Image 1: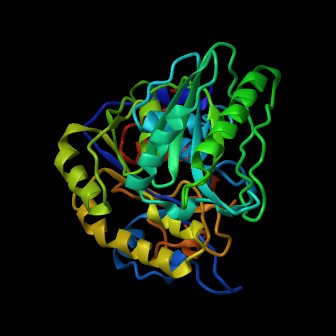
Image 2: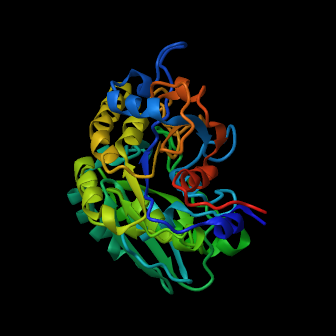
Amino acid sequence: MDLHELIISLAEKNNNKIIMLVSDGIGGLPLTPGGKTELETAETPNLDALAKIGVQGLSTPILPGITPGSGPGHLGLFGYDPLRFIIGRGALEAAGIGFACGPKDVALRCNFCTVDADGKIADRRAGRIPTEESAEVVKLLRAVKIPGIEIFVEPVKEHRFVVVFRGDGLGGNVADTDPQITGVLPLDPVAQDEESKKTAEIAKEFFSQAKKILANQPKANCLTMRGFAKRPTLPSYEELYGLKAAAIAVYPMYKGLASLVGMEVVGKPATLQEEVDLLEKIYSDYDFFFLHFKYTDSRGEDGDFDAKVKMIEELDKVMPRIAALKPACLVVTGDHSTPAKMASHSFHPVPTLIVSDLARTDATNAYGESQASLGGLGHFEAKYIMPLAMAHAGRLGKFGA
């Protein structure tokens, strides 16, 4: 019996609600040894008050030492073993914008970037080109034509867009073309297995035509390709947990991941305040709520310690409204760490807080990495957060006689 079979056998129906608040990339590092992380630097009176009545620990998104992408990081939070259920970023982005991938489709998430006169990447995100500008540039790429292949090009947000190749004999295992650094050329799309060779060749041709189309753009004069993927098959939240689940997020990728696990994506919030407004509005209609906050991650990726601190403080300000709903279980966590010091995702475990009347309150008195390392949840894999949430909401029965 695996974890999912066990949960299915033990899940119980009741009216107790669960809120999972995911502050993307919330874990961090001090800028100097012995200093404070972004979370520990931020003024967070509301999160700290919850820590005093809850229980904390450190969750490892994948395995110790492994740096996760956003897809596997969230899958773990949702209780799906990210080493068993592999979802490429392209499939997530496509689902996030409501594009229904079929069996002949390979989706990829693309970034506009800025290259210099030598074709080397000067800005990996094209200055985070505004969405309204990016969408107009995306339309130009619909002129790319490849015999025998249908091509769909759709805008996402800022510098991000989705490309879907549809045709026979396409595999989804192709290496990313983003080198993750500036000052170098974009990489070639390289097939990682035999069945993906055709996809890699199509991607090369798409890039070649696209580069000519974009050549005169002031910012988005090139592109990189990431997360080639076919659509996966996953058991739903209803099947696994018996939960009617809602997802509230701003960015399409997170909506996409939620939809792939059977959550209903609700509304079109544009800010954190609007997300909480929506949560309050729909609170009587669902059992489980996934609430996503992106900007702790993006500020960390920008390497901006102070800006990440401010985003954490913005998050703290809405906590009283979330707590006032009195869920049977409130989980506050992140999908991974994004230390500003590294300006990237990292392997570090994530401070995780559970607040519930059934929580065995520990001695921690502030939400943060150092306190979480001493908390009653200990160190554990993120795929166990959902069983813990179910248990703290009184939704898991006894195993065995």
